[in-house]
Length: 276
Image (cartoon, rainbow, N blue to C red; front, side, top):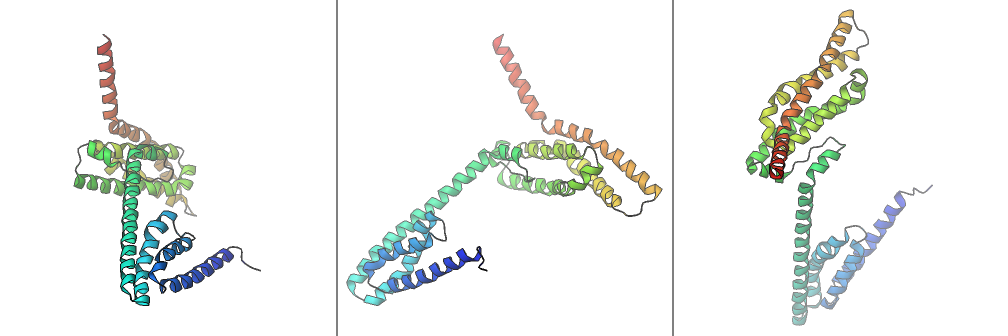
């Protein structure tokens, strides 16, 4: 029975084979066929690639490769002049295509920077998005920004480990989901307020690593087929210890958002003074 998934692929390969044969024939004809070659190339490439790139990058590049074949086929002075005009036209299209790629890339980067806070807030994948604008506004140079990103990503690996453990951990640890959500929010606040990193060094170097180690140890012991009375007592003690971390994380969160509250208080004071 024919495979409905493979059929379109075979059809595409037939198009590509036939198109390549036609292009090869046209490329060896008179230079007057260079434009026909260009448009025929676009027609074929659009079946496989992005339309903009087919018009401005791939087709001009292939046409430039084909023009020497045109010259060899005719060998006349008129052919060379006509080919030079085509070469200039194709180079112009390549330049336009390159500029369009650069502009699109810059616009995309600007959009990511502009909407980084919203992306962080809505991220369900547990990924961190850094706003270079926020880092520069905080007074960080490029080397300092790179160091900050590297450090935060290194610590965030522990959060990703907790996310991987979530299916089992949320069953054994009642407050696990709330803890994980608070930890993730802490990092989202941190990437937009790098100046607060020193204030939450306890969170980064003590609270979070201790929490991860306890969760991992608890799950490993809970998976044991045979548990002694001492093991069960240790599991109970570990759960009690884990229950105390939410308050620690809450205190860490207040530290990382302290500047926001100070700014709000200043704005409130300024507004009140203006009214009076």
